[in-house]
Every structure is written in structure tokens, then in C-alpha cells.
Length: 134
Image 1 (cartoon, rainbow, N blue to C red):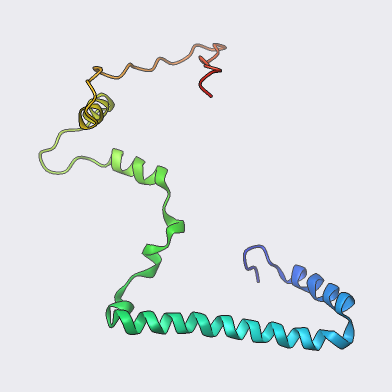
Image 2 (image 1 turned 90 degrees about the vertical axis):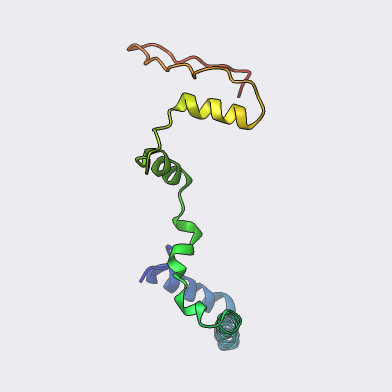
């Protein structure tokens, strides 16, 4: 059983610490308060879910909620996939120079021509570094 790094061993340690810190007299009271808190949070979540279902109607069950999970989005992957997808229809491939020119034109800036080509470094050569730019 592992819930975001919370293992049975860790729960056991927390339980033993609670017994020592709270003592046998106060432990049942705090355990019942914790149970009430968990029940109220669960009821609030279910209430919110039922309210969404009543407001959205039958479309609520048709929504694929896993696709809407923001944790699945990786901006680098999305951009890489968009740039590497083959063009559809009669479109031509877009080069980085064309993208730079199109971006400058869209921003109302004058075009600076094609982007400079990158040159691989020789073995042992240090990459240029601008200390004022960082």
C-alpha cells in the first residue's frame, strides 16, 4: 500500500507517536475527530460531484475526466509533437527560419532574414557564455 510515499511502515510510526504524545486517555477522542473529518471531507467531495452531475446533466458521465487531468500535459512533448508531425494536406514543412520570420512579421517587427545556423563545437572547445545575460 503506497499513497504518494505514505507506506504502512510510516503510518505505523505515526500511530505509535500518537499513542505516546496523546496518551491512552485522549487518543480515542482524537481518533473519532479524525474519523469525523475524513467523513466530512468525503461527503463534501461527493456533494460537489453530485452538484456537478445535476448541473451538467447527462453530459457529466460522457466526459473523459482522465484526458482533462493537468498532470498529463508536458509542454515540451506537446511542442515537440506539433513540430515533428508531418504537415497535412498541401502544406509545406515549416523551417525554423520561416518561423522566426513569421513571428517577426506577426509582431510588426522587421524581418531579420534567416536564423543563423548552429555550429557544433570542436572537442574541448568551451561554449560561448555571456555573464551579463544571466
